[in-house]
Image 1 (cartoon, one colour):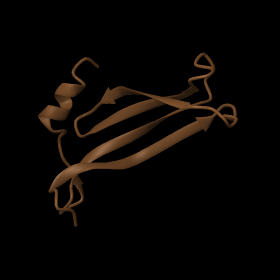
Image 2 (cartoon, one colour):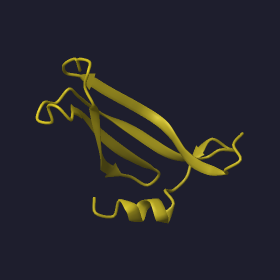
Image 3 (cartoon, rainbow, N blue to C red):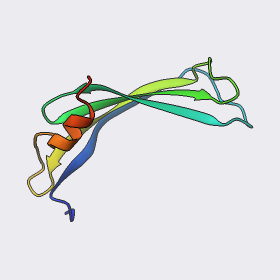
Image 4 (cartoon, one colour):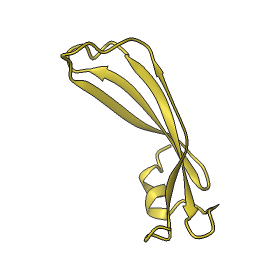
Length: 88
């Protein structure tokens, strides 16, 4: 049981490695909100490096769903979270 009554949990995650990052390198992870639903949102990510920013090393997404921790059921996204992604 959480001390916070409502909050996000990871529903699904996926990452495709396209090529290896060879040491030494500074990894750059770019995040982008991709889709907003009633109780969920999808965040996409891209993996590049500072040394070679035009090369895509990996990509994927994470789907988060807001739940009521006590019941385990989904709830609507909080308005302050929805407002952050209103441009989508």
